[in-house]
Image (tube, rainbow, N blue to C red):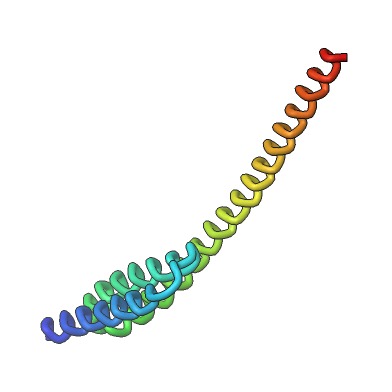
Length: 117
């Protein structure tokens, strides 16, 4: 019975890994997608281990994977929202720095005009 549980765990993790690799093709993953994937992998692994202890590793992996994906999505979504907010703030700072530099150049030009008058 132990070997069938081990096989189920190995097959389940192989399927999850294959799906993760397929999902990685194309565009880079967003922070939200990374969080969901990592949560699903950790949840499936943990669920499979707990499920194996009670005689149902497949069900444990499925339940753990689903719960882990949900939790990972929530964490990844929050991190992605924070990244977006930080990018907006940095964009505003850069814009203000450009405006300050433009005004400094204007002040220097005015000083030079006054010196030549």
